[in-house]
Image 1 (cartoon, rainbow, N blue to C red):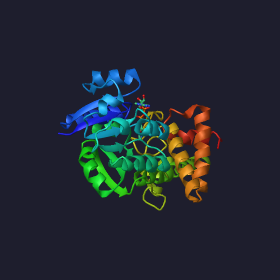
Image 2: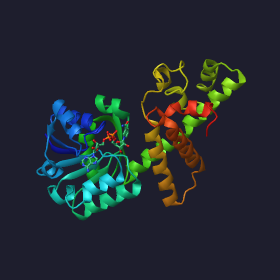
Image 3: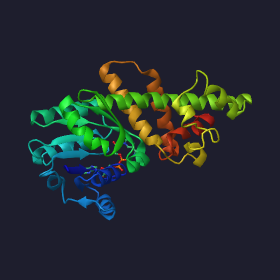
Image 4: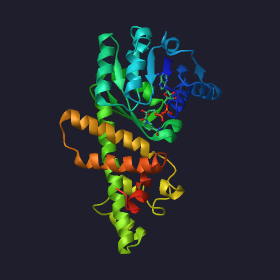
Amino acid sequence: MTTIAFIGLGNMGAPMALNLAKAGHDVRGFDVFAAARDQFAAAGGSVSASAAEAVRGADAVLTMLPAGAEVREVVGGADGILAHAEAGALLVDCSTIDVATARAVADLAAESGRDMCDAPVSGGVAGAAAGTLTFMVGGSEAAYARAEPLLAAMGKTIVHAGAAGAGQAAKICNNLILGISMIGVSEAFNLADGLGLDRQKLFDIASTASGQCWSLTSYCPVPGPVPTSPANRDYAPGFTAKMMLKDLNLAAGAAAGADVATPLGRQAAAIYEAFCAAGGEATDFSGIIRHLAAGRT
Ligand code: NAD
């Protein structure tokens, strides 16, 4: 049994922390938002009064926070994890944040003599609840070896992507592909509609031809061909357009920092931004097909 502090009990963090507790670990959760703490307690979780209290005596401290600013503050702030955690505590940040911040907080942890991994996830709220998340992990071999058994209680696929920041890099590269490919598939179905080509026929052909991709075969943006896709439930998420925009903006920032050209990624971000501004924020990102069908870009 490992004593674990879990900071950030939102949509993802709460079910992840509960799965760690179910696996037999001693988990103490904390969130700044009282309703998140109350919900976690109502679901059987043990709540601490502050982050400092949660991390004291913990072997590992996991974070699942909105963005880089919160991670920087919660990890490195004056009253943060590094100020209170045990000397040998392991830090694992599962939030999706920018690569530069992931590397900066890993450096802070290393300066304090502590191991740290970035371990962003894919699989969404359903995967968090079911314990079937995919973790993309950055950090040293030693840090990964310590984190892996904890991540295994919350996910089914765990990949060591490389040194600190590599998990975040993998996550945004994957979502760069996803964001662009969903627009490509959506444009193709809209064109099929315009040309009078039956949607199912396009699916049957493209899904076994060179147009095949996950956005088509697992998450088809028109109702019918893939019964489990959000298109069949009026684009209820799933993965919201707002989150896709966040990840595409992270990719754009990382590309600018690394001096790498990602023109389609920037164009995709602009399209999702317009969709969000037009009221699509909480819609599944595959709802972009309706935005495009309406002639908006
Ligand atoms: P969320 O907003 O539901 O949860 C974040 C929680 O962090 C909130 O409860 C908030 O009160 C808490 N928090 C913020 N600042 C804090 C602080 N200083 N101390 C303690 N708690 C603090 O978000 P979420 O959907 O759980 O997502 C968390 C992360 O996971 C994000 O980085 C997101 O991009 C990533 N992610 C989400 C999904 C998804 O489907 N929701 C999928 C993959 C990755």
